[in-house]
Image 1 (cartoon, one colour):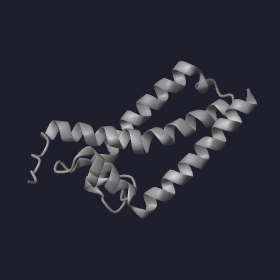
Image 2 (cartoon, rainbow, N blue to C red):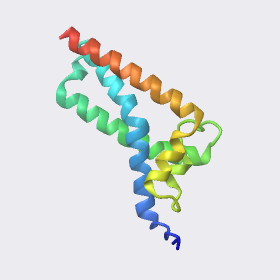
Image 3 (cartoon, rainbow, N blue to C red):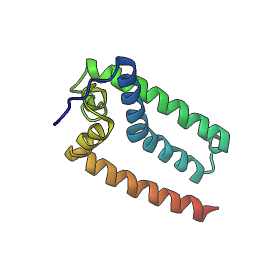
Length: 126
């Protein structure tokens, strides 16, 4: 017998969508930027400053992209993921649905390669 799961509360769904946006989309962008600053020996790359900057930038991204994505869907079609805010889907299905999009696989591979190269450069630079 199959059971239909009740949709999540609005607040729980929004928080889940914001968390997915932050972790899957924003953190790789700003972690890469922090590694580039570290590689360039920037003053902003101090341990607490870099961490604070990454956290603040990630939070702003996670808050602004869904707002702007709903208003301007054509302009934010690759940044805003409506699946993350679908209350009828469980977390695993949201991530699985996001991963099946063609541009996401390209984005994930590019991010993995970029972060790997930057990490190697930062470690070898001292």
